[in-house]
Length: 295
Ligand SMILES: O=C(O)C(=O)Cc1ccccc1
Image (cartoon, rainbow, N blue to C red):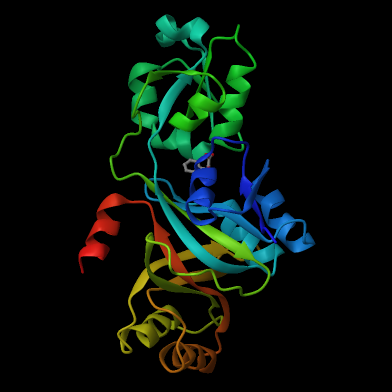
């Protein structure tokens, strides 16, 4: 039976690109927000959800991290990295007068990724934040008489019949985003895809209070085992200033020795440790993928 895959929709989002890269023959179902995608998995409406978690330019998608930490019992079952190219999308009515645009619609990360372009080329335009780049493109297509534009990808231009007024308007070249595949239990996603680049394990750690040097001890538990960390992020526990969750990505698959050893050491330090997942990573970045194939 076909799996149902929730993604941050509507059609034409970067999340759809990510979901399609890994779920080739499954049914993709667009949801209009990140929490809706995640709730879809919890309630059993869908089997997996694909949502953005981190952008190379803008940093973490806090909504995803916080929902993962606070509201849900979801496991990370996979990661997909997608290169991000942003374009200024416009209705054909306004194509030749795009510099007169009064409002730019998009996902907050997409607007942030094009900040310098917007400041220099459309300095008077106001921003309207939408749930996704696809939703922004849909809105612009449905308001042909307004002097508005969306920021999104070429698939959104095609999907909503918009023109690309300016292409590649993102400020930095290495703009890519990590998406996570979520499910409420561990289900192995085959690593056979040619996009497979390796494995990661994500741990959520809370430090004991009033323990000087606690974070140093946490990091040394990884360091002396020579475990490579690819990310460490702190998010507020929402219980008051100064209390944080640390979300730590380790560049290896869960094993029987090293990761259980780290967890036991952290627990001995009175940290609380939860494993958010141990999962295969996939990438649509050409260079990384080519290097992997050569080795
Ligand atoms: O809005 C989208 O298309 C998304 O998938 C979220 C997002 C927004 C900006 C950059 C990368 C992903």
